[in-house]
Length: 350
Length: 106
Image 1 (tube, rainbow over the protein chains, first blue to last red):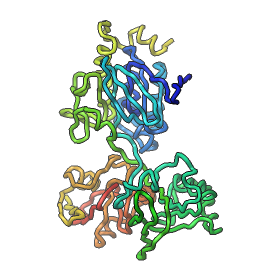
Image 2 (tube, one colour; image 1 turned 90 degrees about the vertical axis):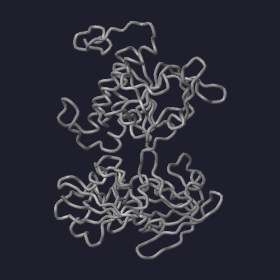
Image 3 (cartoon, chains in turn red, brown; image 1 turned 90 degrees about the horizontal axis):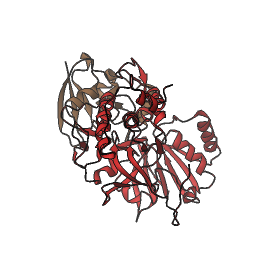
């Protein structure tokens, strides 16, 4: 793939017929239904892999209500969908979030991602499920003011932590990995977890324990209860360890409490919402904004059920509507994949 | 039928009736108990149905299984009486159960 660079370092806009927001099962099947009506799509998802909740929340858990698959795990369903949509050559933009959407004078949309990528598209399909996965924010008073300055949920530049007194909170792989990675460059690293058991990879747990035994990492069992500092700069935290409380002098904190789903920037796009869900017309799955569709768990209409199979139905109807908008005047005859040689050609059936 | 009392951080109480066989989380969602978000729908995969079991009931609800204990790492202000209520099945023995909803599920 070639990426055209503008002089300012931003990529040239990607012009397309459709951008699908969300690579969960419904977003993936949208690629299929759109593909059948000759619409090529770009798929954007904040997670680093396709599958949405299915692969992030319950990859190993069985799903029993997918027609013709008596039992399938979230990961298997994702893998099979990826195989099914392969012929349509969608382009995936993973680990990115669409941050802004605006309507252009020619009625197309301009979308921008948090990584600085721009799309110009005729249609937008919001298949964002429960919203975008974002790191959980510990409900500590005033934490917002420190975020991005001295409280971080991910690390883009390790140098930000050099010579700082770092507190890492959590007991999984992220907490352990960053404890191990930051220990050599930080002034001090304290790992705080609610119990003396860690879910991370056994090898990482061993390495962490060894650093603790050498006095290079401080391990505390407890929870943060208050933050101290000003102007966004942490100077310390109060932690509770059993019945006792303790003050820690630290100036960087990284809480790792997993991910939660938030509607995020979609709320600012002028789309009609009802209790954080997008209202749609059930004949087309179009929102109040012509050209923007919403499918799957993120939409609402009378009788809505949040089922994967409902989302599959929704994308089939959406694709028919989107086709009329993308290629107006082109006559499309509804056909079945079983019997249509032109559909089979698109699917690569030999 | 088992009656379950949910106590909110502000002290307000809500009693819900639950049929044996459902989970406490499902009973809470059916009755729109605030603060039981259950983002993952009961897959023990999100820790947003965190509750504190009243000390008098701890024995009857039992302890968190290892997978639930792992998930509790993603909850905030976890205490010895913490459970994820999607992992508590309603049985007639739990009639009268008292649960406290945490200040915030994240």
